[in-house]
Image (cartoon, rainbow, N blue to C red):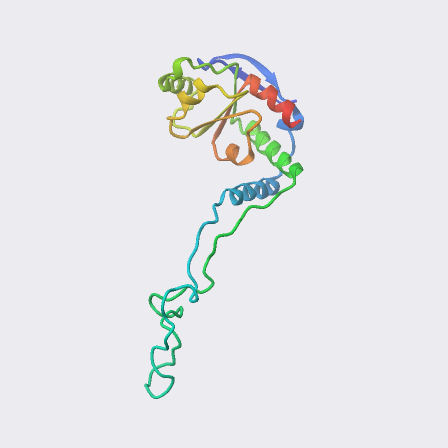
Length: 208
């Protein structure tokens, strides 16, 4: 089983923890990760883009000039696509880009990115994360102690802690989530993953 150090908020090693090999020690499947990230981004698309076709643009009902005898190319409407102010060819319309993907595939992708963080020493485990009075300065000090200042970091706690969330939300590059809500995209979108010891245990229970 992979084993990593456990740090306190001062950046000191206070122990270690054995990770579940079925979650943090599998063979990384890059293609599955790609498919899950593509699905995640597709599901986030609003799909509200829209443009008018020649049938929807106002005007253009009259033929601009007669068919023959003018020396100019024949035209049927000033709202045809080749005209300024005309409609758009194959105009985009509102649509739903979301699609479903197998839950088993999502699990494999999540385990793959967690394994990758462990293999590249990008997983930091804290014995606890306690911020009193929701002070951004205190949260920034914890990051400094862990030598993560300026590093795009995802913090994972066992459950919602309003004090921690409020103290970290104003720090650029920092996002905070909870053990049962972690997803593949959020993990690979951050350079370092910081999890509390309780969050690691809960994640192993949820995703085992």
